[in-house]
Image (tube, rainbow, N blue to C red; front, side):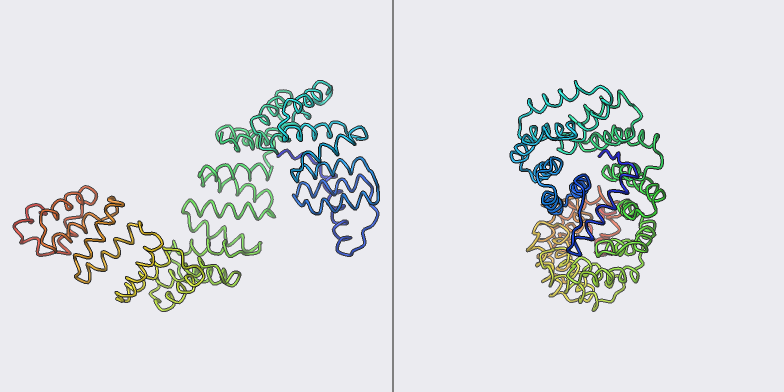
Length: 464
């Protein structure tokens, strides 16, 4: 969105809001001029703090009854609250008293548009355009901002182009145009406009951040990380840029770089359980399970009910072969939320490592209760039965998995081996042939599991 506030106005606004906030806490609100109360109200509008805006306006109207400027602020509040008819009624009763008629007519055009009285809205806009002699580009920008705020991005783009035809190096208009293109999914033009903005204002933190967000949205995570890095270099207090840089590395599977960025972020910002889980996940991916466990523990200290942190800590303990601790962690995750099928799978895999067939089978079946068509679970149950010598049961689960996802890795090979174990050579050969297309090592695996096949005249020529 267009931001054209100079530093002096910004400083005054911050001082007024701080003074107002302090007076609210003390319960003693001093006298404020109408103009200052409008500045405070506008601040709360920008921040979407509508209750505080309402309080500031109502307080102001007690001090300055029937103040036109405060009543127009009230109309803006009603518009933000989607009370368009009330807003229009209030505006029209006070429009003749307004100091800034352009601002009021712009608000009126927006309300009319929201009420689907679009012809009347454009009549108001055309009146403004036809009567603007000095700064037509600024008016176009203001109109574009209104349409952008309403989500009518095609109209916003039209007026921004009009503005840029007059003043082509207006970085605020270029930035807003980039934003609008991004919102309609025209990412190529959005990137061009952000880059043009940066050509004019190369040290704009917000432009680099927005470019990073565009690249992140289009999953160009390497470019996103670079853009967020520039944003952070320009403003080292912008921790959000640093966090998004870490997230970009995280989603591009650059775990070590993500760890460094997450750790740097945590040095300057308040940690959250979600960020610590992402950090722990990165440590897991590089095999540093102790550091992963430490990150998950910190996440749990912040939010003991975060089942993801408990489950992930259990997985790390599993990788360290600390099976007892792994069971404790995943049990806690399931106590918090027993509807996540993958946590039941993790628990089953622990019991498989402990050679506890019954508990493993119970957990796999609990997973199937939640997600009955997950082929990997069916494959795992089949393997449980196969390892127990129950080949008929194993085949049942393998074939169910094959019906859902025949491309599952090594599934056709396991079916072939199971058929062979059951003495069904014809089906074994059929599925073995399928397995060879996806796995050139199928013959080696078959021979490892069924060494007797090499001396079986009905199969040895096929398997080689």
